[in-house]
Amino acid sequence: MKRFKFLCKPEVIYGVDSVLSIPDIIKKIKCRKILIVVDKFFSKTDKFAKIKSIIGKVVDFVVFDKIEGEPTTETGDECGYFGKENGCDCVIGIGGGSTLDTAKGASIIITNGGRIRDYQGIDKVPSPGVPKIMVPTTAGTGSEVTFTAVFIRKDEKKKGGINSVYLYPEFAILDPSLTLTLPPDITASTGLDALCHGMESFLSRKANFLTEIISLNAVKIIWKNLPVAYSNGNDLKARENMLYGSFLAGIGLANAGVTAVHSISYPLGGKFGVPHGIGNGLLLPYVLEFNLPEIKEKLGFLAKELNEEWKDLSFEEASVKMVEEIKNFLEVFKIPRLRDFGIPSESFSELAEDALKVSVPIENNPRSISKQDIVEIYRKAY
Image (cartoon, rainbow, N blue to C red; front, side):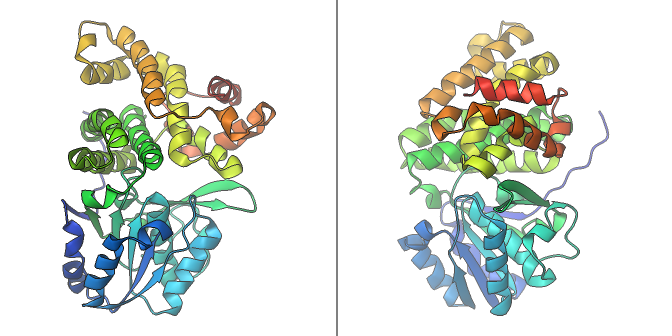
């Protein structure tokens, strides 16, 4: 077994109504004033009113709800300084990945000052942020268990991640009941993001014995439950499993990283507003197809775990079938093509250059990939 390092944080509380444990956590970490970061949709729900009520009984708080579909560095700055000016010494993020990333970014602004873009990159955060409690309302990014927060630099139309152990939340509350209100399109988009995290971390160069177990189980859970949650959003069992699968995929992502799928998807979101999960999901089969020469055995093994009818096939045969099965899987969720976002094919060369600059996932990809290879992947997804 090869040598590896495994990071495991935060403290996780899982289960229906686990959100009611927030007051106990607040007392445990001795917060005096809390910055609650929440998206506008969830901020108008009865569930959020109840959460505010139980928090208000133990501590003062302020609410920031100016969350975009893809957070910008400006929004992260505004949120952070809103918390800093109000004397907040703890952040609670309640929402999808954009909300949680904004909350994590705000936590380091409160203690370090500066701007979000100062910290984009690897290990650029000088000191820890204030304590963070993450409460996901989508099963997707796994941001509640990762050390990354992604923001768009609007002036450059590019995404950039803050990658620092100081972004690890102290607590993650996984309450499946909070995901029941998700509409089908968001269920699909976030769920496909989680599926990509699981598959990419399973196949990545940095994968190890422990992450492979975690990522494999994440994929199996998401593959089985995403179609159910999509077709019947009130199926609590499917929602429970999706939140658990997304959580596992997030742990895999935090330790083994993602691959070229994410690098190739990033410019689509930065320049053309393609939702993160949709871009990843659309590109996944074509990147896997490109990677086949290097991943036949592992992808074939994964395929056999997902479909018992393939158990007698060779790994190579099963891996090829898996790529086609993912394309069929995407059709269930009515995933659009790149052309449906108004992306001109003439932009593929520039997009590919930008994708290569998202270097960590590119280097983690199981097969070396060139600009022309990426252009061809865009063409196949068009």
